[in-house]
Image 1 (cartoon, helix red, strand yellow):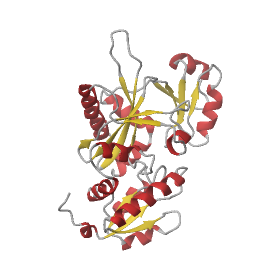
Image 2 (image 1 turned 135 degrees about the horizontal axis):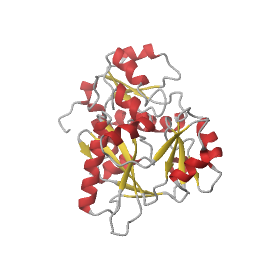
Image 3 (image 1 turned 120 degrees about the vertical axis):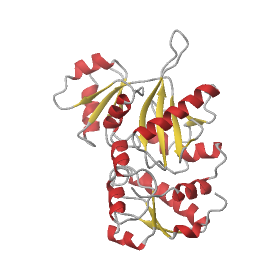
Image 4 (image 1 turned 30 degrees about the vertical axis):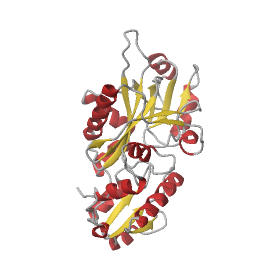
Length: 311
């Protein structure tokens, strides 16, 4: 990367803000990315699709997508950039759309033989008592197409599923009920063809919710993650495979859960979801993993931008 000439990027649009429920997080991510690119001498400019016409993108040579959620992480803006022939960071249209949809991601992972938590797709006619019996308690209920833990509830007592379904249903017509896996939450950042060191997440809240992700300072992040070296290497390889199954490219993040230790001492990992436009705030996980790999924040954003492509 030392031979990279940042002037070759041309005029760069940093896309952030947008119209999703994750707008505030995206504003945080994008402002930091923009500042880092400018520090490196890149001709980078802020571009908020909620405030500007997309036609204005024609003035740019490349785009760094720091949008999160709908219209920015779901293939929508990627399709626009494809039509305008503007290279952009992250995954393409299909992988972005599938990655945003937790339910369809799970189906692809299951078809590829990757372990996922047991889950049920809910609708207004679902027998909620039967779902509670099938999955057991506790369970998590979440909208299929939101990020940042928006709309997620943890159901711990019988009879609570209806209220959790109503909360998630405010954000998406597709709602997932998922068996709780309680042995720890981890994430693997992907940069090009490299899976970065695993980060273990230890929230002080009931689970890793929006507040724990962005507002609290008592969430603990461990990198090294504490897993045996051979096990971490195996899980990093599996995470990279899970990313590729969905068609991911450039950069991203794959989250997984570890089950509680079994009687024979083994611990099963379950893949949870993929993020094709990860957060880049001061609480975000990809910059943490990059630091553990010896990559500074400024180096990280330039490397991500260098991976921008079409198709």
